[in-house]
Length: 398
Image (tube, rainbow, N blue to C red; front, side, top):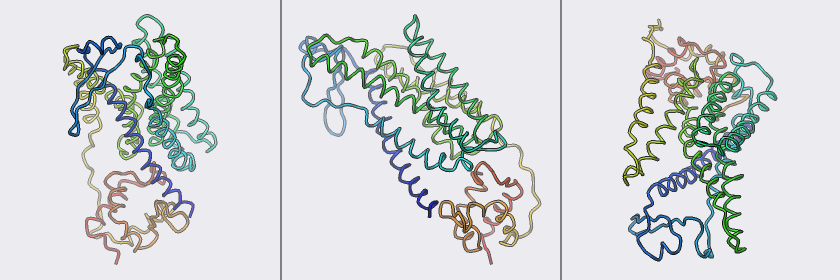
């Protein structure tokens, strides 16, 4: 029953996490587009009110006219919308999902003895430390280098090195699948912490100063904007890391740390292309196609590098039935998919159970090679070929 309830918690939390993440990323992307697309106001009254940019847009059958004030509007509106629950909900639901999926069963999800054989408690502590330590180091970089000459470039270079070190460490400490997700969670934690510790407090200070009639210090807006820009470049790497658990050929590769760094780098430079593209359309900068080209070249290089080796023929029986698969199932699969555990509500300890889940077994074991998780039970290529032939011959168990 515990496994069954955990499966439901995983499903519902994943659903919630995707919904709120869409809301957060969507609003983030929209405001990056908005900032890059604003033009100086034409209306004299807007200029007098302190408006620095405006945009006319058409959507859903209506006209929209958002404006941005250089510092603060002459008067605060009665209703002011704050963008923060999208961020907080994404992090809270993501951490809850990480808890029920990985921290609840560290021996299954976090630990791969071939990478590092350590205690469940140690693995859990190290995983949580990744989230906290990365934020502290990243924040320290922004506080120190961000205030110097060419601060943005220095911060970008230092954070790139920090992410590379963290990715290398994660893939040498945890199971590949967990390492990829943990690096994504690490970046997402920094993104949400930027909102919680810098962006929202700065905005609250600005609003409080306006209500009290005090001059608004623009430094709060500058700092908040800096962290918001960082969040923009973290976004595509984080999304990849969260999706990577579906693609074992990446996270199970012997050089998975290099792959993780390369794909996240490709995502960041492709995001740069989209950010600069808005300015290009208004004549503010050159066409940013080189950024996209770099990202695409990196991805194509990885595709070439990971190309499968020529298939080695495996001698298989003329027909494969349950009798041939039973010893493999008992040795490799029933530990998690038998009467005792029934992970994902799947049982493979009977002919009927195997046949009921034939399509899933074929996809997970043969095509995607996701199961066994981290190949903890050592399923061989020859045994996978047995499952493949069994399924293609009709998945019969009589």
